[in-house]
Amino acid sequence: MKYALAAVALLQMSSVALAKDIRVTYAGSMGKVMDQGLGPAFAKADNGEYQGQGQGAYGMARLLASHKIEADVFVSITPGPMQILKDAGLIDDAVPVASTSMVVAYSPKGKHAAQFEQANQKKDGSWLNLLAQKDVSFGRTDPYVDPKGQNIVFTLMLAEKYYNMPGIADKVLGSLQNPEQTHQEGGLLARLESGQVDAAAGYESEVRSAHLPYVALPDEINLSNPAMAKQWYDTVSFTIKDSKGQDQLLHTQPMVFYAAVLKNAPNGVEQGQKFVTFMQSAEGQKVFKTFGYAAPKGDSVYAR
Image 1 (spheres, rainbow, N blue to C red):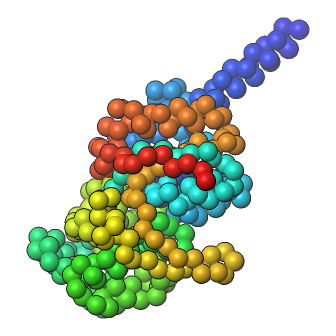
Image 2: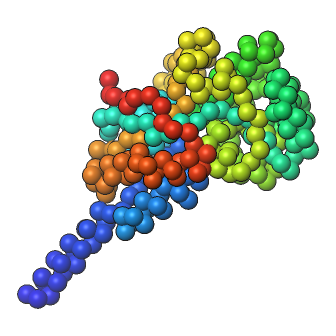
C-alpha cells in the first residue's frame, strides 16, 4: 500500500512538473528573442522547462492546424497565419505582443558593405540599384510559406513607387519563388552573417538582435506605420496560388507580432496563457525591447 501511495505521489509530482513546462512555436525571425530571452526567463520564473521551435509562420501554422505538431502557444508576425489556426478551430483570439518594420540587412564581411552603408546614409533609394546588380546576392524567404517573404515583395513594390523607379522590383526579385534567392527562414540571417549572401530581407527586430548592419527604410515602404496604410500600403498587392491551385490575392498586413494559446496545448491552456501574459508584462516587454522589438500596436485579432 505504501508503495502504491508513493507511486501515486510521484505521478502527481510529475504532472505538476509537466504543467510548469511550456512549448512555443514561433515565426522563425524570433529565434533569438524567444530562445535566448523570453523562453529562458519564463522557464526560470516558473521553475519549468522551455521548448521552442521556429520556422516560416505560415508553414508552422499549417503544421499546427493539421496536428502534425503541437504547441501551447503560437507567436506569428501579421494576422494571416493566425487565421489558419482560427479556421482549424484551434484558437479563439490572438493578442499583439510586439511590432517591427522591414529593413534590408547586409553582410559586414561582404564586398558591398561600404556601398550599403553609404546607401543607408544617403536615404535616396540607391540600395535598390545595389540589390539589382548581378554581382550582389540577395536572400529572402518564400512568400508561399513565410510572411516576411510576402512583406519584402510588398516593400519592393512600394519602393518602386516611392523612388519612381519603374520595373526595379521585378529586376531585384526575378520570379516570386526565385530559387537563387529564397531560403529557409531559420537560416537566412546565418547565411548573411557568414557572407554567403550580400544582403537579405529582414525585420528590424531580428536584425538588431543579431547585431547586423542594415539599411533603414522610410515609413512609406517599411510597413510599420498604420497611418501610412491607406495612402501607401493598401495600394500594392500580388497573387499566389493557394493549396488548391486557385489564385489568392495578397494585401499588406500590420507588422505586428501576435500570440495565441492553442486549445490542444499539451501543457494546458492555463500554462499557455501564463506565457502570453508574461510576454505582455513589463518584464516581457523589457526583453522584447532589449532584442530590438518595438511595442505592440493595435487590437487583438478575433476569430471570424
